[in-house]
Image (cartoon, rainbow, N blue to C red):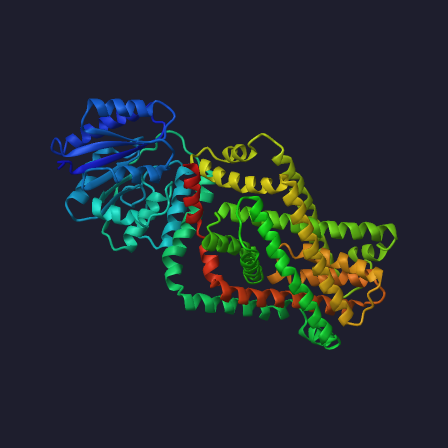
Length: 608
């Protein structure tokens, strides 16, 4: 049975120059108001690579009031604190930053707030009106902005969440730690927010604080890390509890219906009706069957991608996952459906998020490269036969047409996307052949903070998976061939729709169809409209009207509308069936895929 009542933890990473003085100051301050034998000082040494472990061990050997808790690997600031707190003896648990920026005369007040039984959590504050800290602008402005965001999104009543001067009741802290997910710089904030939400009594009091050393806003830690953690915690505490399974399923269905309802905002409904009435409905239905045949191929291709990076899954399950993710891309902005697929393979098959996103990146690169190649080959053929003059005239506005402006915009977007696809492939292949670790060098150039190591680990796994596929000639060939089949069926679907409108499928029309569909698909890659509606139609109709004499502008627009509507309808129907089959709610999938805490957990496991 120990007599220790108060345990002070000092988080230390490469503090060889200051740790001895900090421990001595802490011991003398505690001895000034606590009985001998009632306190301990724990150096939470977090995988240091300097002399800090030796100094801490020597102090622990020479003074029984000092303990050294060592970690072989970096746990992160919050992780190191939690590791030490769980091994502490006291009922009152305290920590403060080893630079002693907070005046130590406040330590008695901090400890007393918990020992008195009046509060469960106590924290110093640099921003209370009665004693605001005099901070340089480069520290103060980001700190004020951050704390305001926390109060706004996480409904905290505190003014300062990151002050490194806190104390806890042992029972309360261990209870809270079960729910705290962050192990890094956001640990303090999440702990305080969850304490307030759980009804614990939290005391915030003003402290005298003097900045020590230099500091700057760190791009990776402060923007990527802290910002994503605010959003993750907000979703978990404010949104997720309100999303029952029934509500989320209804919400996903409603969003799908909304996406379909938005189509008339981008198209003239009377044009849609007039053009569709002229089509042969039987042939239109056949086009839907043709397009549906491409979806099992998508599942097989995704299986081959995953196999190449070490994960074997059934193509049927993967086809359903692709259906759901593509439905999400039609419904949600910014291609959020891609993140949905990463969530599905993580939740249902345990494939880590970095690998899930990497497999998606590989698929997207092959899609874009295949579409670009199809468009490029046909364009070269058209140029060789002198058939591009009318297209150039349409693009420069010299030829009249109902879709001139939208078509010009769409084709410019398509050209940019195609060029980006080529650059991406060249970059991936070049980096795969390089022995240099370009990822870590790039991240550390942006950030000097230890959090950059964790971010670099995730990116390295992501790029490593992509490079594995790029350098596997067998996988590259299989995925490439499958991609060619998938997008050929996409074009054949449009050709069948052309036939439904009475257009004779001559070799010239087939060539124009390949070019128009390929450019239209490139144009809709950027999420500028729901499901790419408008961009696809603009590019398709401009190209078909400009390069053929058989199809006028109005008919070309009608064909594009029907073709795109058929493809979106098949996608949505397949997505709804797959959601029911795999028991996945679209809104829940988006919720979970945006949970940055999952990535952080895997990231820490990778680092260890």
